[in-house]
Length: 597
Picture 1 (cartoon, rainbow, N blue to C red):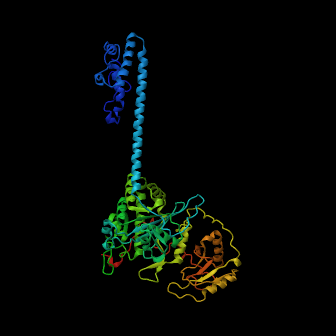
Picture 2 (cartoon, one colour; picture 1 turned 180 degrees about the vertical axis):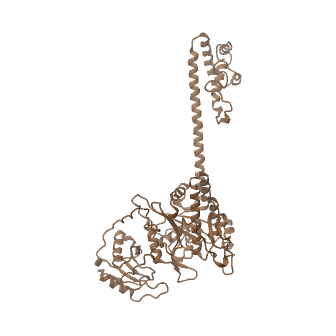
């Protein structure tokens, strides 16, 4: 019997249980049929040569392939010729066998390559489709509503820039699920409010991060915002900050923050009630603590309530209970207490994800990605899975003890002191300045010497600078100090600023030296020379919508020719901000007495 007469023999014989081994034997069907045809023929001399034992035999499957076209007839003829030569002793049969084996190897390689290509591109195609599916989940909006002109921070020596992201929690009731979770059916269809607003600042070197909350009832200047969904332009106004969302979407909230802080904000991310519940489940919830039993129930004085019900001690909250924790206000005393509880929750989520190595767990990441892309609405520049993933990878290596979460310093709002607040500029402005300059709020320097600030152009001669001095001492319910601007003008003239003059009064909690936004580095240098002459800190120098150099004598400088020296402890940016450090696992919320059980 010839070498290829029985299946399973020879270098390319059929393998037993090939399917179980993951080998698709059908790839070799053409080759097996050809071998059968070579030994089988279709009558005539070829069959005669095969039957006398001097050539190859068709084997048991010979008759089954009799009609296979050119594979049967052509190869059969070659086989017959080879058999005849072999019977005559010519030796040509060995050379023909080599050619046939070479053809078989070529076909095997071809089919193997095709199979691999299908597997590779099929897998890649499935991955691509899933990636596109995730991208399609993401809802996007414009970064800005056109009401801000803050400038992005210059890169450091390594070409890195800080990252600022505005995190927004919407109280929208425009879906059945959000109405069920948030209550207040009467608000369905109304304008949403941004009841949670936090700025995430990540340092340029990605070594530290800060989260600053602004209470939802803070009165601020809201700039002009274009509402693209309603094709409407809302004029600038002075209003409660959570109303900005209804005046131009998340982009208007971002513009309002930029106007208040002077910080360029790269992106925003927004989530509603249902999104909070879904994301909380996906990340595994958070570990929280209350010092007393808590029941945040509605009362006659406070008809709202989150319905959070926990015994004193530590708990892991997720899903709807996590939403209750994040919405609890009355039982934690105020919006300030709620912000503190939210910071505890966020720190716990980050700690848990790090401890569980979730950033390297593919299955976990896919689950979080699926949920997050369905739950979040983001600014267009952040609107791909890759960018969201890259963001997570940038944040994952920041040490927990270098993450600080705090609430903006504030004062009672003179217009409604019992319900609203305003920024405490004397304390908040230095905080914003540190974030603008990418200085760590915790004072740590990562063991590196502080960078030497770049030198700008020299300030113009004092006698050539016209300085407009404004009396802003009438703040915090106090009457303005009469003649205060004139006193400071005299002090400036004594320092050589002979063109200093008084201007109209305008209340301001903190003193500052403003220069026109278009004046660039020269304007800043000139303003710094005025601040230095009178002892004001560098953080008091700001670019503003003014026509020329303007010195605002604020409520923090009611007497004296020089700005009063500040207590270094009073300048601590974390003082009076309810700071929660990321490494503090022992943080625990105090429960307001009427909501204990």
